[in-house]
Image (cartoon, rainbow, N blue to C red; front, side, top):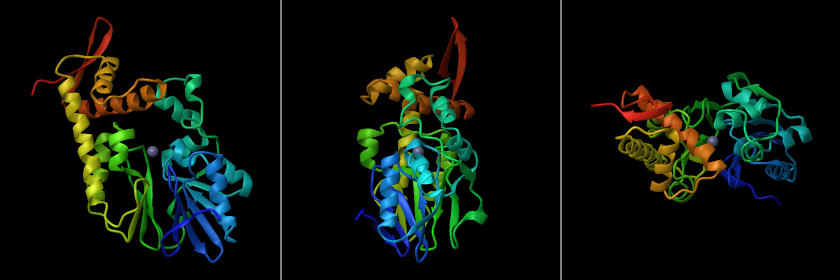
Length: 295
Ligand SMILES: [Zn+2]
């Protein structure tokens, strides 16, 4: 039987690279929170449900990143279930090419038109309070992505999506964790630091009853990258030169995937620092350069 771990009461999750929430809403009915990376994850989730005699009522996506919506198309084809996604994220789920194009900053090269960057299209509907199962709450978590949301179930279990990464992931894999709006992300984390729940289920970290310490570590990581950029930008540099220095400092290897994910993140940091008045851009010899403002 497909492994399914009970968080509390009717709230379960499927372990994996991205956890999939499985929540019972009636004796034989369940909804999913996210759908994993691909068809295989979708099939795994559906097996875990049908093997227990349950049926799938709906999928709720926390946000539109491909590792959270990759099983949508399979699940919808197999069951016809509706898929609910917060605000702007809903448009990305309906048209995943928009997301890949956003990361790249133009029409994406072939190397990005693959699974981890480009999920299969599914038909999504906007997430509103009236489609929520009874006793659930939507928790807006902007910053990592535009309108990412978490969910608090009737069991007081909070599914956190990508609000926090584990310390190990930040040390080994995601040395520059993805974000789209650093200012909004810090505000979200500041609020989340005081959040209480019976249990927290992060997408990419261990389940825990207390997330305050991990939230602080994720905030510290943002401040660390900010300070690194302010140090680098004592001299005027182009985005590519900034990336080269960041990659050297963090021991990263430049390839198309890293260029796109870390490049997008660093450009978002630059926008944040500019809005904060800490850096500005200048044009020199037809190069757009970023540099610290005089404090
Ligand atoms: Zn994400």
